[in-house]
Image 1 (tube, rainbow, N blue to C red):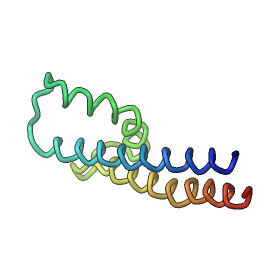
Image 2 (spheres, rainbow, N blue to C red):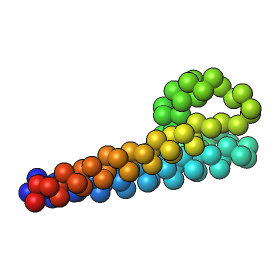
Image 3 (cartoon, helix red, strand yellow):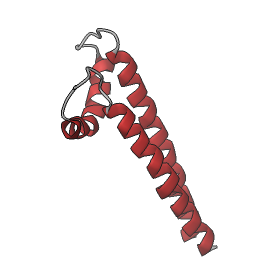
Length: 97
């Protein structure tokens, strides 16, 4: 029973991480144009991504080259977590069977 629970948690976390990657991609694509800041979709994307992107931007020291690399860094962190955390949870669940 615990193994099934861990597998389910790992699968749901994987889906949530992939969904967040697509939210980050949407935010990056929208930043290439001049979006209406009062649009509810734009506001939602900013509210979902800014708490994660802001600390990365602060660590990078701003927009030195005029390009915001923080979404790419967050996507790489998510990819690492998918490779490490999700696979580890699946491995632990497999050992519990």
